[in-house]
Image (tube, rainbow, N blue to C red; front, side):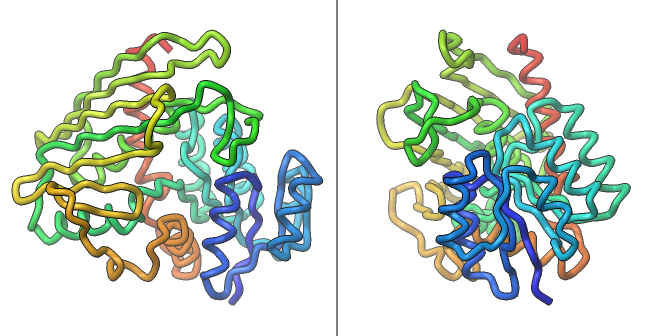
Length: 316
């Protein structure tokens, strides 16, 4: 059975999904949705996608459509996820699931009602580097004492990863912190019981904090320190230091190093070295097997509960 998919949001991240799906057998992208019809048509032509629209509802009306991947602006995620589920389609929504906790809770309630696969793009669960560490933890060979994480970008203007103007504003807490808050609880194997945050000045044009610091503690005692910035003029991305009882690991996207900066071979951890592709493979496998995926809405909702608590602390 070929799974027929629609992709909403043909920007920088949507293209990463299209590139990953090319490597997955028996999956076909049959529709692409974007704000700018001409730009979306260009992407469709490059990837051989026959249906192009600016309205998600047009794609959801396609009877043969099985699933949707949403790579749209944060503020649209929850409503669009609900629209897909109500249309009887499986859905994977890029991180974050929501930027208002109540909306995320509504998505979970609807998913339970309709029984379709609903998954959130918490890619760090799938990167080979973090999978390697997770396997050590589940084998009882490594226990986290502390995670030290830096999420750094240089984004003083509203540009995307391709250097193009964004139609929406990114957010350190609800988007970028969500990766680490979820990963910490997932890797610690223990729920977060303490969370604190402080933020720097609000940007006069973007209306968001450009710097933030977060402390977390899991029920088992493990701690996490997370520093986030849109002001960092240097290497971009998120860098994770796992300090454990038997080793130290440093993860940079799909690559992994030990505490002495010696690279660890993670090429045999999974069938690909591409975290986005592995995330998509899990989505399609869950659909085929009729099971809950890793990074399901139900599994990641506690992350958004913590983000909500932190927003309340920050006076949001």
